[in-house]
Length: 139
Image (cartoon, rainbow, N blue to C red; front, side, top):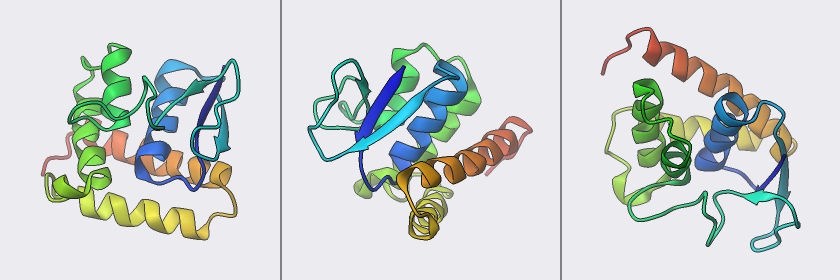
């Protein structure tokens, strides 16, 4: 399946792409477009009006967890809190990790030549965060 999101990815789009590829669709392909340019037959995420986007107080990562019944994975839920704080300015201090995760993803984008590369590099960071939390990291 092809998933589409806005160009110039940041934390929520990178983390959501990782979530999709790791837990929902291992064969996922990603396309990066200008806002509101959704190719037919693709699934948009973290775009205005997208089902897999911000809803209520949830960032896209949290919404996708809910839609796909992944909330039983407590590690993903804790990561959702971190991504939420990193993505939503008013909740920036909601976890101790959020500012650092925001900084890391800003840096990844700056040192990546494309959105595709930023997503790939971000996946390594997300794998590391997932494993650290799963192995018992506590704040």
